[in-house]
Length: 380
Image (cartoon, rainbow, N blue to C red; front, top):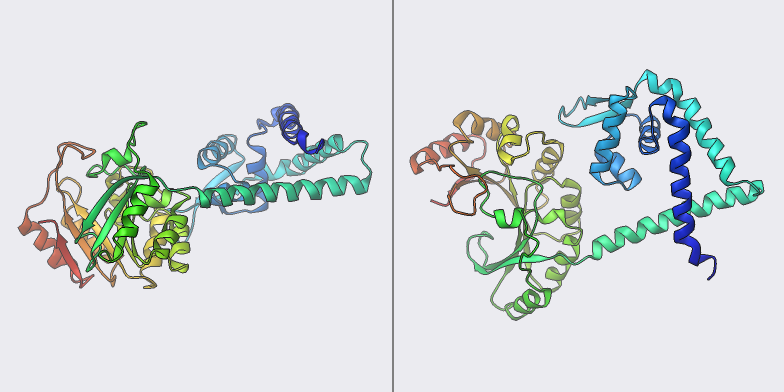
């Protein structure tokens, strides 16, 4: 018990002293302790992506972006586009980096020898093994906690005949989104206020339990539902209640989507396809958007493992015939494409946008049917 009570203190001491050591010995190389793990990861895994770095070291994406940018500026790392998908950036070390890696490993070895002083060779090896196991245990705990974290609900539509094709359903709305689509009707969910009213879980759960004889399905919308670690636990609960589940998503989390599809936790997926590839970032409100995850989600759905539809909200300022033709070519052969009429309101993120008239939408539909025969218009 006495030993375990020092875990937090000892871990903090090791971390802070390691930082000071590395910052000092790496200063002549224009490196710091913050960039060192990324440089080693990239050197030992040439071609790794930014997402791969985040997953490998359990880093948040902001930390990875800053660390890699410092390495690029220092001339130690370069970014190259994947030959199969130009939007995916792969990371490689430069010749400058390769020239110092032997020195880097020696610096790391010197620190190891410092902190294992007065340990026998066997004790040092055991310390390394136990430290690695403790880190794995901590990571497993973090993953488990994230998966079990309850998903917060900020809106509920008790009955919809439109959201889930062919089903009587209710809709639950999550908060927060990683896109800033100018035409989005749910700005209050995208820019979630600190005092946003949350619907207690017992309230919406009690409602769904009572309506099992009437409702067939539940739609999960947002915001972006796949932002939240608790999405899997929520969908399991809905399936336990006997509901069919429809998921609305922007497609930016293909690995999560793959998991939910593989585990049979979704029965229908509606993916918002904002525009053609060339205009995607502008239409999503994120100019430097990495299209790799979007492409992966499109490919996943078009495998046909779960019923799905692509949805595109048509806005006069953001969509024209050329862009929609390119979109059609992108998803040629898809199960279904829905053209949604833009509706202006006080809740729209960007003011001053306009809808195309019905006749123009029908022209777009006629053109897109050549690529996706099941193309329909919704909302007008």
